[in-house]
Length: 239
Image (cartoon, rainbow, N blue to C red):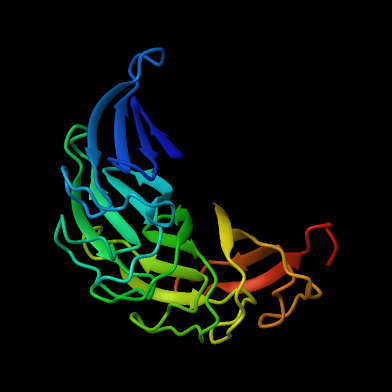
């Protein structure tokens, strides 16, 4: 189960029933269930009752909730009830009792694609959403619909109903590589993005394209369309 707490509201993600659940926590000793949604965006659907389809991460900002899900091979759709294939889902939660599905993207950055990888983590900086994904050994590209090989994806969310894929990097820090180690956590501070990855036995390197062995990676994100790998450390703290 994943959680994100906003003022007086808690969002929870799981893998059974209503995979997205909303609780009123005005009284923290008595959380009250107020709404739920299925993995396809529906209020009464029955899809997603499997561990790989569960919610992997939830993140709220303003009136919007971002949901990262397990993979599904059906086509991503912008229609609630048909969005099972969107590994990234966005809900308008201006009404906490009625979350409304407003947009989705598949793991390649497409609004209608069928590519599939788990989305494990989010980080937000202004109008830029950073997405950390599962492994894929295809080539990372900067084109929506072909970016399934980018373990790190960047979306412009200045329009919350139309997230636009603007950049991607593979697990080595390269914009066109094929390294495949999943990113399981992301955090932003100022102009820097910190990415935590799964283990890799190769040597950590400070050069983009060779940093697969760095379980911690740091990117300069002063340009949201061009994240630049600037430093890495392996799981022992070594360079």
